[in-house]
Image 1 (cartoon, rainbow, N blue to C red):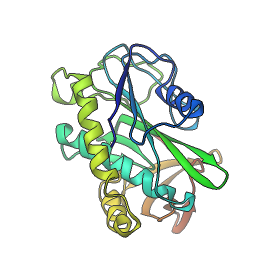
Image 2: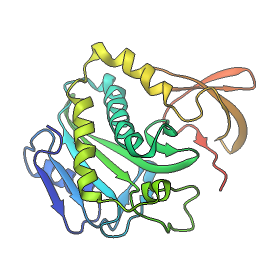
Image 3: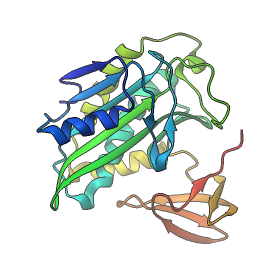
Length: 246
């Protein structure tokens, strides 16, 4: 069960690194979670860093033992993204979105990110290390971040990040406990219904070229169907960037 046990770390370089170390040291119970009060070298997708001051935000990693094949790994990504969406939209409202593949957005601003790292034993998917960073109380961000936002900025009030982290775990567990190939088709449609820029024009960058495109679909394996000049491209993770305007 996600969040049981729930470990609190005073300071760590990265909760994903810490959880990976626990997995490498020996068996870890499904749902074991580590929450950091301070993270000094947080990890994001494609090598990006995650910024947070002590106690301000949610920085946690949960270790899962997926009952899925590696070919079904996008199912887990969708489940985690929907769990994070369920949590954040509860407080930030219906302008919350999921940016492909699994960032949490509010309007055109990034509120959180998810990084899932896999541990294999031969051909067996033994563990998924799911790290989540969600901006809760930060009001001053590093200038190099293009479009960040926090729950405090959205709502105008200060929050208890530790209490919200436990609530996030409950939302993740509610999704994870029902994760099964039989529900994935419905969940994929739900995922697309709250997808950032779905069927809306936006700017993208691919191979150094910036162009206007429209997201038309997301395939069951996670590929993004992006329409460019009348042609629909099927793109994998890392093949296209969203261009954001500060």
